[in-house]
View (cartoon, rainbow, N blue to C red):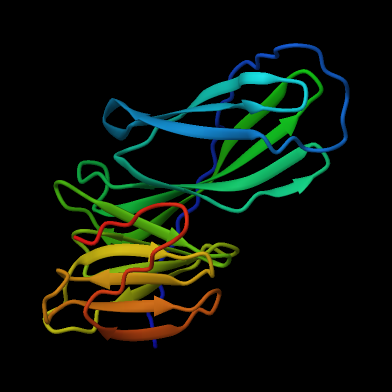
Amino acid sequence: MRVGKGSAVAAIIAGSFGPAQALGASTPSAAFEPGLHTYYTPIANGTQLLWSTCGKTSKLDGCFGAGTIAPLSGACAILEGAPVVSGRVSQQAVYVMQANQSNSAHALLNVYLKTDTAAPRNPLTRIVLQKTIDLGLPVPKNPSCYMGANGRFIYAGTNASTFAVQVNKKTLAVLKVADNSSPPEAVHSITTDEKGNVSISFGTPGTAASSFFLFHGNDPGGEYGGLVAILPNASQGVSLK
């Protein structure tokens, strides 16, 4: 499979993190506490994402930090990368896709760095914007956004795009993944499994014009076929419509 290269635009701003709340006593520890999680709440028509870090550690129980990811323009999908842990610190990428016709003709991808520090009494979270990438995906009036990923790549599309894009996590280079059917169909879904396989389906399921690209693990290449190809996984149900 041969794909064309897209463009990337960089921007750097600071994120925010809220006050921590500690419950009970604590002693210093050199190990990261794995019981923390961060959840995200879209508000104000996708112009902001509220985040909260909560959970239970060996000494603490509750919510320890909150903040806002802003400004955004039509935030429509979010994805986290795998965490990298060193001592009491865990770092991972957070990817937020935006699609708003009034702001940009193309969908954008914000790449953030989330840092969790399991301090003795105050686990802290900080989320800072690293880059903004122009994905080159057209944005409809009422967009639906799709994202999936494996260890090396992020895949994204919208319900107005007859192609998807592959984003290299390390370099953030953008490659176009086009539908080979004629006429081309819009992206229907992007699904993944635990083995790192990613399937991009185009068109309406059950129709002759539908098709798919399936990428094998971390291999940038893959296979192409007719009809849609849905990859189920062990943690979240996938719509078959």
